Length: 404
Image 1: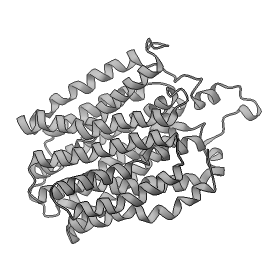
Image 2: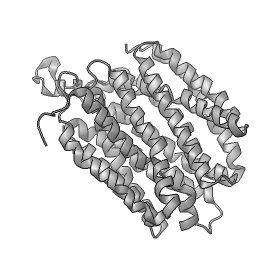
Image 3: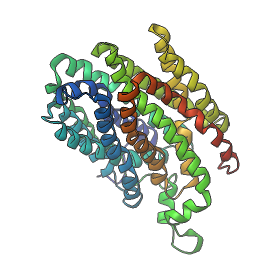
Image 4: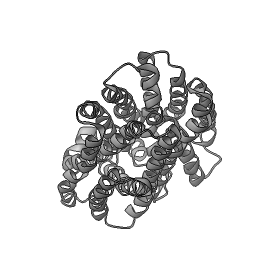
């Protein structure tokens, strides 16, 4: 791997954004595949929603909770191998889902692919921040937007161009794009991140005398535990609502006899609307009061999402997409504030705001599925979209621990 990159930091950031687009194209194909996988591997079960919850939770545990371990590892080993192999493992494992002979084998593939996702995100997020050149909020929002474009549009390409046309058995061909981009990563990016803009690297490289010595994680967390806990809870609740809608809405639309094309289109555009919310919110986070943006995001999204579930046609689509746009607009704030609170442990800060929060949202898919089988998905989705209101009372606590 070259010591320096022939590309400018801005070009490296754009390339890293493309890489994020590619990996998240694979990482979020599961909601689109879920009805098809259940019909193929578990067509006889009556508890479809419960089984779907188990599948979602297994994948989320590896892809999200694993980010804590990989965040810790990438803080200590300044290498882009986490990014390179993360992309490769994700592309290969999730592309093989189409030919999984059993539910057990599918769960193993989801575990491997989830580990790839977990390895990629902490290191790649801190790399994006290091390439920011003073515009951290903008850089992270661009990076996250690239991922969300992949989440929104990538699975549509996989489903429309391959799966719906040639069948699930054709999915292994989809891994080629991920393998190609993984081969390009060592040629374009450099490691470690530029020391001038990476606080973790600066501290690690500084002489270990007196105040220059790097704090351990618990020493760094102790004075900031309250705002970190608030930020984490906000991320968890946002994720429970987002993951719940993203996955179970797919099954709900399938129950409503939406075609595969229409169902994937709605899910893909729903996620894409979230990516636009992240981009706009990230840009605004560098310019406006983030308390107001957090309050707006968690309050205004609720009526939009609730009304969408009780609408039809174009009104349903507009309200659904607007709701996810507004809910997602505060995502970047959580990451940026956590990194400011833990400047010597940026990768771990990112992994807690993304991975650890998303894992809880994924694990709670099991009770969501059980409730869906008992009460019906429509009622459960109504409850999910009301959750953000619960955490609104916590946002003022951040003002008492201002990190700006």
